[in-house]
Image (cartoon, rainbow, N blue to C red; front, side, top):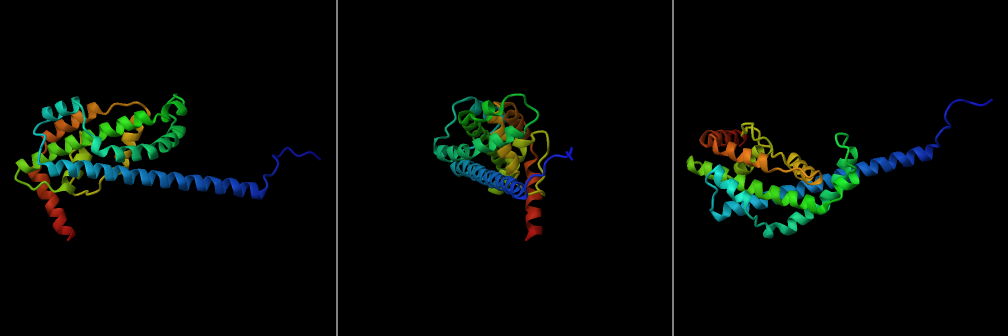
Length: 221
């Protein structure tokens, strides 16, 4: 007697599909983790190079002028390219799952050039912002602890309207990575956000932030 139920899927087929799905998920996570690690190294290197020079951005207006000019990122070109190589397949994965866009993912996420531009621009923006943060700390008589400079710069870059919390010592590198990759894949500009971050850095209560950072460090040790 004919049955209205769907034919059963052989067990080995189900197992193979499940295994393939798990494998794809693991590979995607590994690629994303590697990408975040590369971005972290790139951000570290850019800010450390700036701190070693002793040259500082002294105002938000000064920072905006620098960002409006030509960026010298030649020393970081190799690291930027490694980020791009990993970022393109990750961007494709993000685009495939994105429901907020009607643009075909193949068109949006296949441009390594646009992602490369976004990463280079983002690194330069973060570097200039960190320079102003370091200047504000030094002007307040506080040592420009590289870890504090990076914490404040990343937080301001991601959320210019929020006051950074030195008690939360996490560096939000996953969000930073997502911002650069997605901005490149979807052709979004970060210049306005960077300008707002510079304005926020100029208003920082650097002495209070440095004191709170030092207090938290003493408590940890």
